[in-house]
Image 1: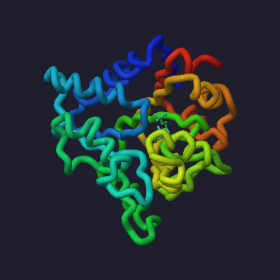
Image 2 (image 1 turned 120 degrees about the vertical axis):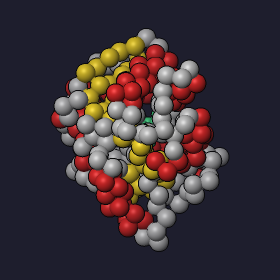
Image 3 (image 1 turned 180 degrees about the vertical axis):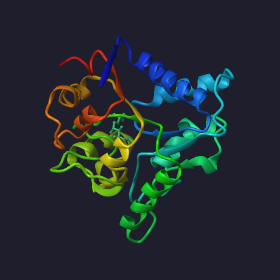
Image 4 (image 1 turned 120 degrees about the horizontal axis):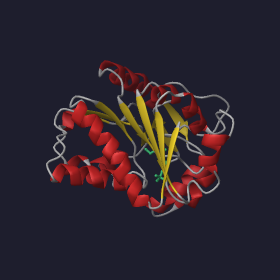
Length: 241
Ligand code: F6R
């Protein structure tokens, strides 16, 4: 894993966006894996800036998002679907038909998992996956547990994740307790991965990812087994290294 530490969180957004931009320029039909959350916002803002300056054309790329809440409609202001349109897709020339997020709409949301992995495979797999990291070391919504879950699956969010996400909802009762998420296997199949982390709250998880054992207790630690991962960190997130 290549680790790059920056003084400012805003520099991480630009660095990650430049890597994504290089991928799009060299392969205009590339498949990107995208994340939601606070950390990628500066990355998406930089991509929009590149688009506004005429540097990037998104018209032929395809995207797959990592995860989505179960029981939250796409129109809900906290759905990840809405997040992606509000912060990126509505601001660039991406074809909405080329955008996919897991969509747990079946009576049994488990039924929506396998088709998502199949759609990624059918698109030729993910060329570049963007990840954030949870305070507890989760990637996507693969929470700390006994085994690395392989494919897309339904997950019960841990107390720590529900707590971290409550800032987006009126009360903790409103925070969804279940999500659909790409598995660790789906993520590890990506040809290249960028993981971004900012702020003190991520310092322990970042330490475990880089220095701890490769263990599903810190799901992000699995990334050390991938041949092409770059971690972009600010000084606070890197403070325990
Ligand atoms: C979101 C996702 C999560 C977040 C993580 C960090 O799609 O997959 O793993 O990346 O929870 O979230 P922020 O960036 O809000 O700290």
